[in-house]
Image (cartoon, rainbow, N blue to C red):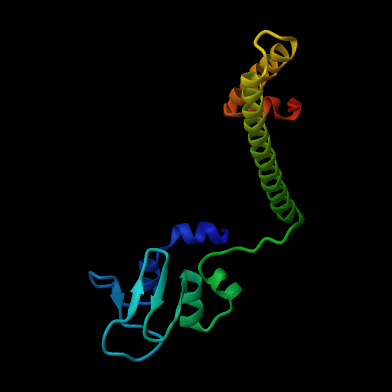
Amino acid sequence: MTKEKIKDLYSMKDILERYGLPQPNRAGFICCPFHKEKTASMKIYKKDFNCFGCGANGDIFTFVMLMDGLTFKEAFKALGGETDNSFSTRLKIYQAQKKREMKQKTEKKLKQKRELNYLLMDVYRKWLDRLEPLSEAWADTYNALQYQEYLWEVLNDPEQCYEVIGHIEL
């Protein structure tokens, strides 16, 4: 199981139950198990905690680490985590990272194309106002504006966009 899956599986209340600690009061506080106190000063959230008395805070892994004096790796395994260090696992992780990077790069490129497209439409509209109507320059500008408006529709339609993004030259 991965770190994210473990975090999705367990809430802080589950971890408290695991250690036999009382459930939080209506305000979400318990007495901090990391220092002695009479009043509840540890706020329990859905996925993490914060003690206003001793300053301890973190997620479920940090809580287990502090309670049992474990390293992160030991706490991860204690909560059911598995570390598979095989080549195929590392390859899948690498491929997922590359896919994410490519998606970010594509999104950045798309954003730049949209911005340039918007600027070009603005320039063409201004030129249409300045040029003599139905002149050759006016007709060329009008046609260029029509093409940019078409591209605007394509760039803002998710289905069409990714089909043609590599082929669009502004």
